[in-house]
Length: 505
Image (cartoon, rainbow, N blue to C red):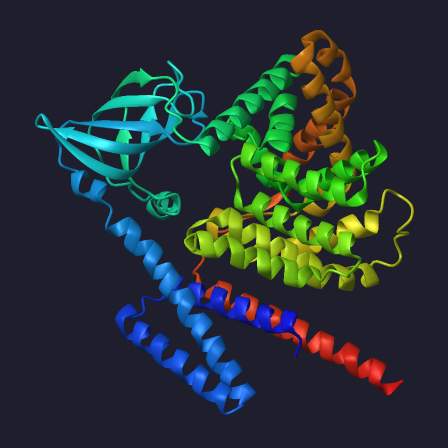
């Protein structure tokens, strides 16, 4: 077995361990002892040159490591000192710094605050942790503002259809303060180099946002802002529902498609202006990192960024890259940093399942759709194959979490996906020009506006069809396991048949 396959098996084992602990509470103290025992076993069998037994023990070690990593992340949240002040029913004062770009919506603003100290009964208590503050949209606060917040802390409450407590836990938040009194103490509380860099990136992002909204009106500006900046907070709930009905919600998320387009464009542009391939590679990676940081580092963008990095690196050194391995490595890298994403982040689940569906099912569908010419009609065969593949792999997650499945998604994706590169390219161009000259930005926005208007018309037309989607209610999570088990077995049987077919000849 090659080294890359060994690493792949170990990564899969680690992810499987996180998956186990995500749904089943396992005794961590006993597992720690098992981990130590397995380490001795690996060393023992390596000395005896029993490679297969040592490798199996190493796999078990990675499973236990995944379990312990998830448990450690949960323990950190549950032992936060801020939780001791939840639901006391009396006002306390928090001193903290805005640690993330606030989400400004129509009726409220969500501010993530990193707390340094609590003042209760005139006593200052140093603490560390994050609080989500729900406040009025005005006045507005920015990243690195130091705030004095007076109000009550509450434990996040789950709704019937949404695990909000888990969703916030993955961000390290265990307390919420609703409509407190807020006082700005200091406009810039950046104390380190990286915070200053991040503040500068967010300032540039805000300039791009202003340029987009100056040149375009809603709903075109909503789509452009989401595609280019990952800015989905301004999209109205009515338009989001239309996107769900038509199966086009994914175009407003920074996904692998967006990152791949951006990386290819950057590489070609940098090589075109005279840089060597190695120089263009390093600069492209640097710009991709800045872009992912700018849009808030969502899991879909992180996965796509890591995969694009693997693909660009393999192109640089002249070796073939295996997409399956790149996906697993990306998942492992992200889950080492934050294992709670696997359980509580639906976007993370959909992102990885969609790309795995495209990898494993898309070639099968392309063979079945050979009647559609590939070179003509804007690669309709590839678009349809990718859409069906992604939908099959994500179908149970969509039904379980949202209770809705789009029936018109294959058609709407065929009509819209070929134009995504043009929207991203022309959108970035006019937004950058608009920072320098708003008038020129307005002029250069016309091609992007024209394509976006077409996209809006498609969304409006198909969302009004009476049979555009199906709604489900009260789906048990057990069906997810059954569905993916049958899907996994079907893929294995199909691959075995293909292998046996070629062995005959």
